Length: 492
Image (cartoon, rainbow, N blue to C red; front, side, top):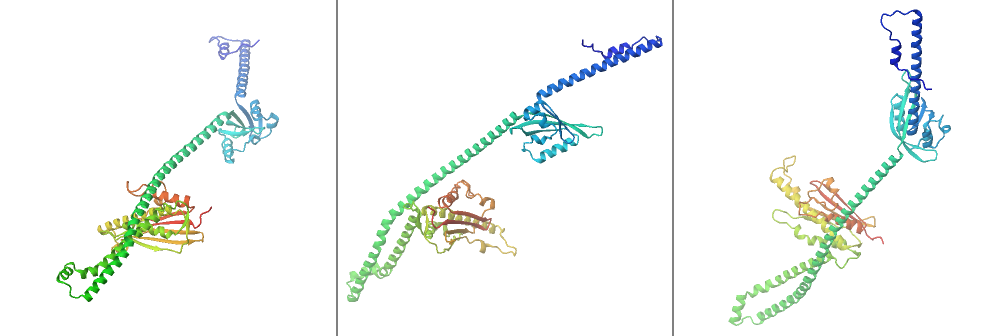
């Protein structure tokens, strides 16, 4: 039969005698004995209750958690059934070993060094640990390690309570992988959208250039026929005029005294002046038609509509054609002194390329150079007028700065490559800006003055179409230099 629980109140009641009542020795001994029996029964009941509570706690803990106890050196002295079930090790495999037996190798040494530093100082450590079971599988545990301290405050044992969180960690890792995949797909989508936008703009630009090329070629063709007709007939007109004036000279030689009417007509028409001026007029017309023919040839060389395939060409012809087309922008006007073009052509072989596309590259770069030197001229002129552009010795720098120049040099590099360098002494750019000049839609020009596609398309033509290189080096207020390198022969 289970003994009745003795409460502290019952013990007090046994000793609660009326005040002033005299007890004899037997009664005193009986009272002391009764008190002793009551206290003993109370202590036994408390011990039984405590043991039962501890047993219940241990049962619940063993059901829910992985429990292990180690000595001060980390040697396992106790493991519960859950520990063995999760780790796939038997108690005999674990007791007497340290926890390196379940080390997965997934954590750095610093991780465990920090853990031991904490618990050896008598503090509780908490963390998530990835362990390795006996069968090679991995599992995650949420771990709490509590040190048991002696009277001196030094750890003598460590109690580790772990809860398996493998499913949660796998779900977290799966979520991280999904998020990473989503970010990667989002970046790919954004890149594809940007590329699509760039391709669309380049197609529009290419269509414009194609239409411009067709227009230029058509105009050049239509002008070419009548100009050739005029140019061809000028030779005959010149000969006819010489013949007529020769006959006129003979008439004057053999018939020095014409009738009054002819003499009056000769004087009114100033025949002597006409005889002197007409050859000059014919020479001027001949020079003009030659100039028009050069422009036509340059336009046809620039458009190159009949050269959609790679072929061997003289790059100097393409550069000269581009300069001729841009001649109007190079001329002096008003206070603007014009742009001095310095050519330093090397001896280049014929280069296998897409000539029309390379001409487009030359056009983009030289046009930008013209804009750059014009901007610097405008800025320098303004600073000179306001007195800001003064040297250390007090003299203005107008003579050295206000001379827009563009230099174009060509050379063979390593027998397999050609290099074209186009430099200007224009306004220049910072390093941060020059690194972005080949990005699509990037422009340093005011809104409406540029699309930001010229140099991007030039980069594509040089690098992707010709397997070459294009670089930009620039310094503010000193100028910019573009260097183009392409192979002489394209790889098959």
